Length: 193
Image (cartoon, rainbow, N blue to C red; front, top):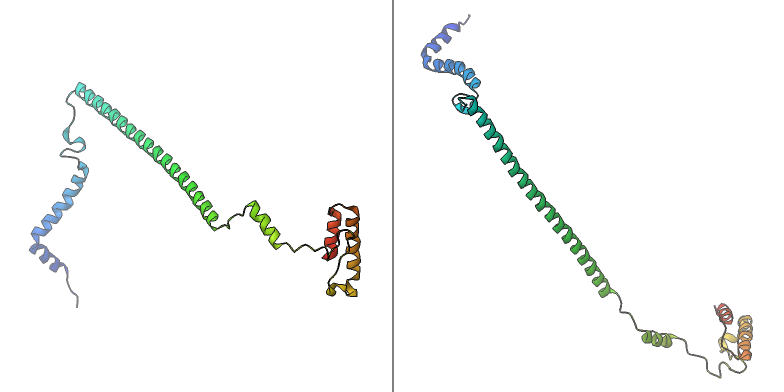
């Protein structure tokens, strides 16, 4: 069975004649309205046109002067903005420099607070004397002959070469009558260590 749809469509159109009329009117009017440009009643400018050549020239001159004034206004605003930006840049650089040196000062202060206190020259001498081994007495080291009285532990035969080396160095020191020379001191140190 074949269904016929065109009579149904015609009956719908008859029932909705008003809506179809509005739809057709919109389809016809929209292209015409689009050509008008939407700028007032008569397109560009809304009907503000010169009626004479002089009036047109005057309008053109006025528009040019207005544009020059607007350009001058915009240029002055741009110059103000540039000066303001440069001033802010200088302020930012100044703040950066101040912050940098404040951080260095804070760092230096923190390091000084954490560092051990420095001792004076007199305190260093006193400390060196207090930790120095006691000097040998005249019974342990004879200052005239340079003879050393060794403790029992060092009188073992294993220490004989060291003892003989030290005895000769101290005997030479006592015979010369002068203080300990650097080379003698280094030789003693080498023998002991």
